[in-house]
Image 1 (cartoon, helix red, strand yellow):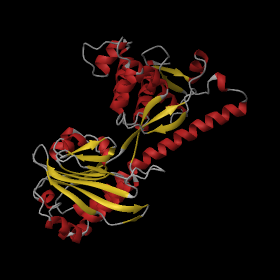
Image 2 (cartoon, rainbow, N blue to C red; image 1 turned 45 degrees about the vertical axis):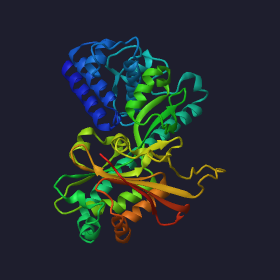
Image 3 (cartoon, rainbow, N blue to C red; image 1 turned 180 degrees about the vertical axis):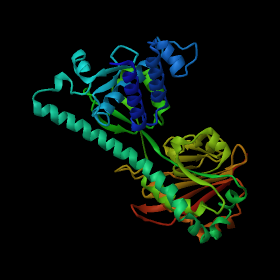
Image 4 (tube, rainbow, N blue to C red; image 1 turned 90 degrees about the vertical axis):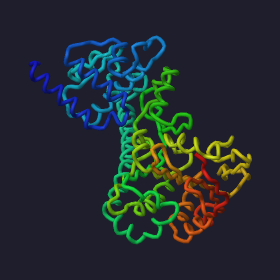
Length: 427
């Protein structure tokens, strides 16, 4: 292949891979791909240690014998490339390939890869092939699973985009109709200056598990693994799991969070006020310093905001996890209904947590957090209702305060949220 033609085709492949979204939101996968791409252009075949330091930002003291991060992410990148060429890049006669056991990208024809490797990159492993029809069924199943994942990922992105669009199209009108809400004790500090308001929706990180054939079998929500970084650290300690656990750039929003976003976000969209909606997994320390923050979601979905809230809170998370808060000064426990069949403790009792305080740069942080869905739904109705907000103001809370609300019932038949405790936050 002519050098100039090869270079042009290489750039075409790289550009399509970047724009395909196949590397999702994984900074490590993107960094690894770009580094190996640069090495390919320069003719360099990097060593594992060079990839770790130059390509993934590890320290000079990085020890490849103790940390499998390079091997884990090279394996992930190989699978992502396989996925790309089985779908968006299936029209391409050549493909960028990561030969097994090597740390380099190679641009080769599909035919040469199929001859040199068994099983081929885009076919079902030999042990699973019985007849032509069973092979087709397996491949179709894999494609269907991948399509479902892409649809779910797109759904999360679309929700956030639609909410931001809602702010632009109808927020101005709705805001003008809710000026009394803006003047309430809870919301007024957000409008005392020109800082932007960042609405943070509590999402949950999900990773995938595959079978021996590489087909995605299930999506997993593990409360011990709450971000791509935590999954990466877990896989470094357990490299044997990297063969079947991997980040697919997916998270989900509880239904109550969507409801709360729909009710609260237009209220905040004041004239001459910048308002943006992101998910909690996208929140950065810089944004936490430079914006007013309104968190909306489950208590367990605070993410980066968890430290900011519980460092100043008079409550701590109890033995029941985020279904339980304990008053640090009195020891009183506030427990949510577990929702487990046969569990009668606190049956039908749903709680929610509200906090409002000044953050690290005197920015305002408001946390609207249900222990579960029912609590968040009713708390949202309460803090977007003029009479309920007047009731809160009548309690004369200090400028920095936190509260627990309670509602009772089952399913959609729940009572309005009632304030059961109100405490000052002493900073």
